[in-house]
Length: 315
Image (tube, rainbow, N blue to C red; front, side, top):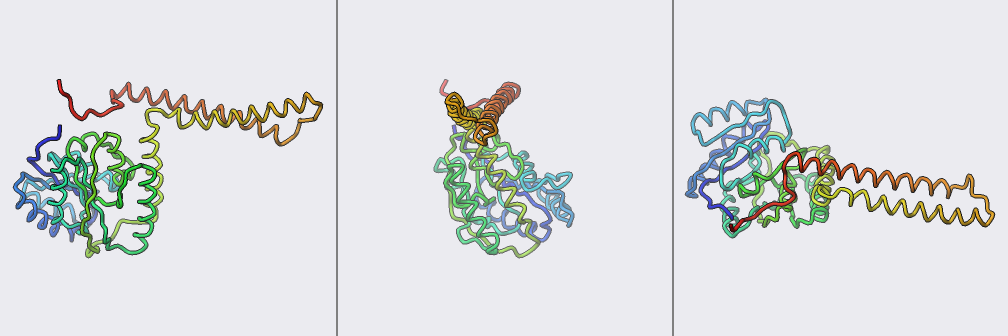
């Protein structure tokens, strides 16, 4: 059953945003104070070295509703966001970047959608104010992510989103998977909505976006696809191609055997080597699938994790 909204948490991952933090906090307080809920702002400081933490500490001392989780080193955006989410106590949790490119004034729009019964509301930077070198790869990546995960969104990379606490407590983020929150949560059967949000160019600080993030994002997308489709049945992923390869090898070997009975010489023929290779690779695929199946079962049994998520119980 969906919980009543009494408290709102805003979780913000930051790294070297000393010029942006005071302005962002001021704008957030102005919006949150007028909404009529209890609220808190939780920063995940990714071991900033520009004085951001000192500013955050001062803000925290002035208002205890501003909380700071300082990481021991730079664990990436996913790490700092996870830290902020883990220490957020709101019934609804809003995530956003700390670079002032998101507008806190859009927060009520997210809450309106949550009140309609949605579990996750994702932001769509429909007029994105970033360089072309960021927008073009992002469009390709969003199209591919939508196709592979089955979650129809325009902007997977937008950090500005809102989630119910029930969703957040079941999320486990690794690598660069903060951009796939909606896809990971989709296996819980959650309702997902998307709204258009304002986006502004960066005024202070430096972007942390680089070419390496594109490659890492693609590899994480493959991981998400595997987790969504085969995490509880890995044998289906490896076993089916394994059986196909083995069958092709057996058919090819049978054809060569028939020719050998008919008196033809088959030794040294490339087709014979191909038949042997197909059988060997096919058997290895099946064996790999069986091992993955054993590992998956051991994981679920040892951790007590269920292969399902309960929405509500009438007892």
